[in-house]
Image (cartoon, rainbow, N blue to C red; front, top):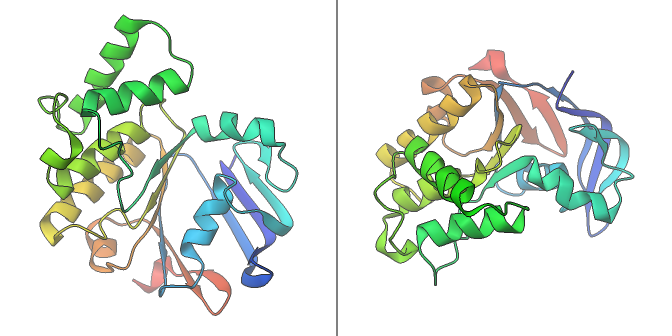
Length: 224
């Protein structure tokens, strides 16, 4: 059963066609790269997965939700099953790492204080940041902030992680560590979909590769 299934999908932004004839089947535990120049639709495609952007036509299904007909009230339920990693972190700068993570858990329905504390410790441990919970985001390096963003993304044990240029603002070595982390999550069964410009990563961390170009998306895994 694919977690994401798109059949003859068209994606538009302000009436302009961004991608057409999108056909995808993405499964549990896969590591998927979306590559292509700026403006070819990589981020737009990701946004349709979490209903930030509408699907214009075709059949689109994410985690069993019909993305053409999803009701507004069901979007938060869908997003709870997704982890999203942004290039620019989007951490709340006025509160500590622990508070950032606790905020997400409370917002998604966690109530028990002990369970919240345990889960925050667990995810910080997972990303190698167990001693940084008391710090504010601006006291951390870019790589450390991105690890926190990954910790935040996995809080609710999502089935899918969407990472939009997660290494875009990081030096090569730090970017490498971040992709290694994401790759580990896919090995553990999560579907990870990542946009990137850094084609070197494709050789170091193999996965399925799709290229966005000329309003089309093509699988190019074998071309590497």
